[in-house]
Amino acid sequence: MFPGFFGLYHAFCTDHLPDSYCSRPGDRIVWTESSTGDFSTKSAWEAIRQASPRRQLLADVWHRSLRPTISVFLWRLFQDRIPVDARMQQKGFSFPSKCQCCEAEETVSHLFIESAAVQGVWQHFAAIFGLCLCDTGSLTHMVHFWRYSTPFHSDLHIRR
Figure 1 (cartoon, rainbow, N blue to C red):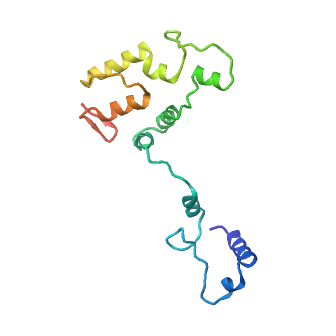
Figure 2: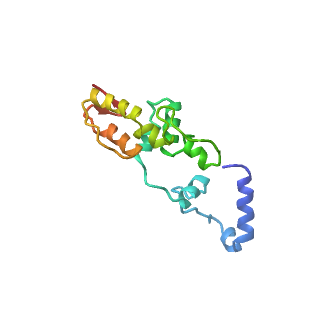
Figure 3: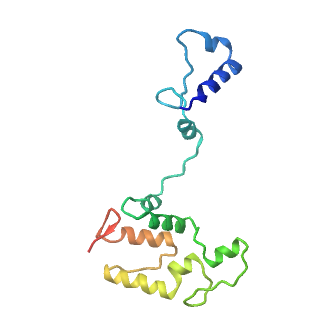
């Protein structure tokens, strides 16, 4: 705890609570949201936050075997934070959006799933691992397909 906390605590106790709460010998105020009864900002945060269900895919992004630059890129990719042309236009930038390979609109989905060039890459690696690459529809589905469809996967590594 920080030094000023006790002053704030005492000021709150004397200003907001009846004297009977603060002046009885042996009594103390207990924070029920922690196992020790002591207040901490962490326990307050845990008490008020609404946690989303844990998504394994996002947990895998931060796996220790991945380089931080890869983790940041994947996190930005799954959070739709890659600055592709279509996204930049949504932010107010004015320029034509086109893929450098085929001149289609440059979107995350096009760059990583839909374009003929990237489909060739996916097919190449699917053939290497003996997988049948079906239409996955989204980047999340594609990653789940690669992560869990091969018997060779183990802790984020695909082994052959």
